[in-house]
Image (cartoon, one colour):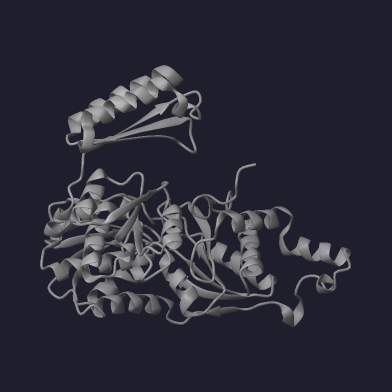
Amino acid sequence: MSRLFGTDGVRGVANTELTNELAYRLGQAAATFMGPNIVIGKDTRLSGDMLEAAASAGIMSAGGTALLAGIIPTPGVALLVNELHADGGLVISASHNPPEYNGIKLFDAQGFKLPDEVEDEIEAFIATGGAEAAAAQATEAGNADGADGMPAGDAVGVALLVEEACEIYIKHAVESVKAQGVDFSGLHIALDAGHGASALTSREAFERLGAKVTAINEDFNGTDINVDCGSTCLGPLKALMAESGADVGVAHDGDADRVMLMTPDGFEIDGDFVEAVLAIDMKQRGVLAGETAVSTVMCNLGFVRAMERDGISVVQTKVGDRYVLEEMRAQGYSIGGEQSGHMILLDYNSTGDGLMTACQFLAAVVRSGKTPAQAVQVMERFPQELINVRVADNSTWAENQAIRDAIETAEAAMGETGRVLVRASGTEPLIRVMVEAASAEDALAHAQAIAAVVEAELS
């Protein structure tokens, strides 16, 4: 049986894979495992209202209170959990996925995503019939606490609207910049809201900080979120940059937990560049915990070299922002991120926050006296080549001597000017061969050589 929770909550096509019953059970689980007061937020998908109603009903059926924040970025829910002293949060969003999908992710009382062991307990709770089944079992066992079954009558919960939920989130981002004694006066920002939740927050925050904002895709109809726009499709932002003459471009995904930026010439500022600029700025201000930045094994070698030059250590985790966050919390680090634009700044929020990341990046740029295009020159991106090799079995590649020899040959040839990463896909029978080198030609040649050996040995 496949696991209900993926790397970022429960996802599926709305009303077929992610059903109302499942949303109801997840609402019950939130109130049962985390506590009665649960903040609920959603992105702009058409199915959000339906799933919000079902999840809220689940919370109330367990005697809890559903605190309805409405359409708001995912990091806004994490923030509200702390601001409202709630017991947890429930976000209805499929992030960067297409409009027909939706998802549900849960936050604990501190605004952090749930650990695997709690998700496993929730899965077992749902599989055995939820709160109704638990109450029936308690009654059959003669348990006094369960003798009355489910909450009934005046024992059921209620739903309350969270007044000015987006305002609380916007104000938090704005004040984080003003507290540093800078603003965005004179800065022209091109914004692509991706027809998503950031349509209600990002422009307002940037304008309060003094920026001029030219925006697209701030409208939404529930079926256009992430469609040929936003952080996963930067073509519209590039066109807007050229048309508007903006100093910097900002693009969010549907729930705005990530951000990608752009220079006027169309250069894509991915998470590696953002983290490099932020980490160096934080070190200069004396707020970089442990003088360490956390990233994943997929970060560009150029990022690692840039950090080394500034005396900043880099810790690399498995791919996935949850692993980045685990390392940050375990060691007390303050910044971590991924190439995809997920950036976690624990001084400000407990999860990836696209608006906060953009605000802190632009604050660092303003403080440096440089343009965004000049600021990202602290790092040089190494050419990267990725080849996926389909194999019969991807579990034994690490013990294959021929593959190991091919990797060692490439590493020896590149020395300190390149890097090889070979790993098995967790979802498909693939071996992923990634090579970074000083030139695109070298990266391609070494990747092809290793991939050929993998194919010959394992296909």
